[in-house]
Amino acid sequence: MNLPRGNHASADARRATSPERAREEDRELLRRYHETGDTTAREELIQRHLPLVRSLARRYAGRGEALEDIEQVGAIGLIKAIDRFELEREVSLATYATPNVVGEIKRHFRDKGWAIRVPRALQELNASMSGAIERLTGRLGRSPSIAEIAEELKTTPEEVLEAMEVGSAYSTVSLSSGPTGDEELDPLETIGGEDAEFERSEDRAALEPALERLAPREREILRMRFEEGLPQTQIAQRVGLSQMHVSRLIRKSLALMREELLR
Amino acid sequence: MRERIDLEAPLSGDFQAVVRLIIGGIAERVDFAFEEIDDLQLAVERLLAEAGTIGSVRLSFEVGANGIRTRVGPLSEHKVAEALRDGDAMPGELTLRRILQTVVDSFGVDESDDGRIVVRLEKLKGVG
Image 1 (cartoon, helix red, strand yellow):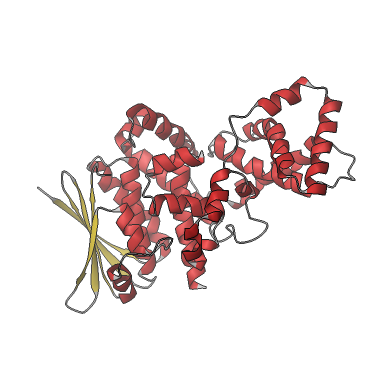
Image 2 (image 1 turned 180 degrees about the vertical axis):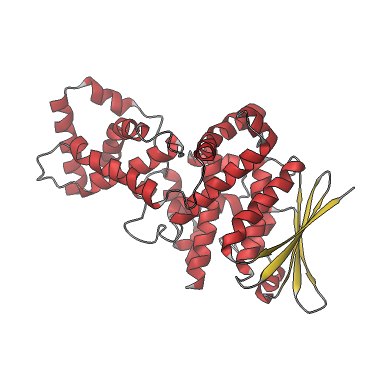
């Protein structure tokens, strides 16, 4: 899943038109998507409404979760809204999508919230670590040490290590409800050239059944890590996620695969 | 000079986070990068996941200037040994052996006197 970040053209165009015109354009795109299956219309709708997602996600910033993660979750709500929108509805897509986006974000905090009681300071440190690691990796040209992360965040190495574990504890809750259920399937997985390419890969035929149960993005990340041997930093760049997020996804995916194998 | 840290931890999942935290603390002393720590934690985590949930496991960490040698076991789950002794995984397969090949610099299996196994992992600093 790559939350598109660079393409603001659609959003800019949307702002430049009147609200009525924007609603008409949305409706036309929805018609194209729902009546003819035009996925480019779906992607344009996503692009047009990402500013709404970002705006809503910002309301939930500072609660121990990285803003980029909240935006990714909110984007899932947006896509669900686009997919479920009924053309007979009189409401605008923005109006219909807002409770979906907020609901998805709230559900994320509720279902995937802290599995153990974690001091707020550690939650905040965990949330700021992702950005610190990205900055340091860019600056140093390599993965930073714990001491370097601690210095960047003006804290101690011990607190950084604790914050790392805090992130692990909180993220494991979502494992068993991963991508195997329809409701949990991340609709953003359908976006992006790399996933499509992976689907066509000859290697796919040889994948274990448990590996095939993973969402395309997670399979692709595992393939890059364990077949291409790419380091997390490079994978993070390729898929547009933070290194910490890639690390979490790898751990989650391997644990999920094992659960599947034991069934 | 190598320093050694021994740990015995329950195999139940509740203590995996504690093991991870300890590995992080040890690796930090060797000035491992974030990604190297994550690799070593992942290697041990996947091994313990295969080791069952009953009883406890011993972990031994030998800390040197260039890296950490870890011994996990004795383990009674022989399928761990089989998984590690098997040949290279086929393209597209994701086996324990392939995971360890990726995240640590070397690994091996020793048989203990009682027929159980000990897995050796070596993770070096600043390699790859």
